Amino acid sequence: MIFLRPNLRTSGSKIAHPETVPDWPSLFREQALVVEDQRLKCFYEAGVPSAETPLSEVSFVAMDFETTGLDSRKHDIVSIGLVPFDLKRIRCRDSRHWIISPSRPLVEKSVVFHGITHSDVVDAPDLSAIIAPLLESLAGRIAVVHYRTIERGFLDRGFKSRLNEGIHFPVVDTMDLEARIHRQKPTGFWARLMGKKPVSIRLADSRTRYNLPYYAPHHALTDALATAELLQAQIADRYSPDTPISEIWR
Image (cartoon, rainbow, N blue to C red; front, side, top):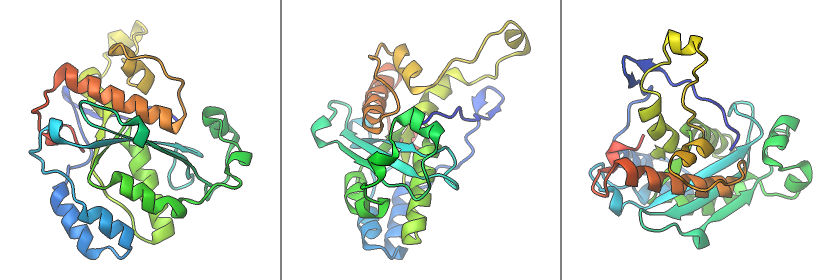
């Protein structure tokens, strides 16, 4: 994942979430009736858990993208990593990783981050060629990401450009869960004057707080695994297996 520090807006002492969380099961039922692409229809027909479902009963899939840049309007996906898991087990054997030929040219800055070069993508498939296995891997599971703007925005725009239909899905954002603790209050004037910086909620720094091992960043599959482990640690630290999924999804 190419990291961009999000602009987390604050209101009082609480994080102000810009979006309203949809009624995801109802939205999926509605989308299943109106989408035209059969692969999307199957994805929506698989449904999602009800808002009251305890975390112990939820099937998750950690997802991470590497991209040609940070703006989904100007850039595209170059790799996708998926790792299915639940609270008890991470299923590495069932993980998926694709390198994709982007519709926009690679730029030097992004190549430095993720190491995917022109020779890596020259014979790689377009996103359209992996839509079926991608949606099959996501169907019925809750996606887990670290900074949802990337995965949601890029996948939606990637689908629109290829299918003329976007995609909507709930996510658990491990960065958002860290922000709820460490970004509740803006850094005060005196703290800034003394050079105090906000607590980092980057993936690697967040993992360090839970004594999780260091992984080299910017590989989609490794970052997906790192995100899965981080969510397990976050839930063990301050939630419960009985916590409803509605407490943490967006």
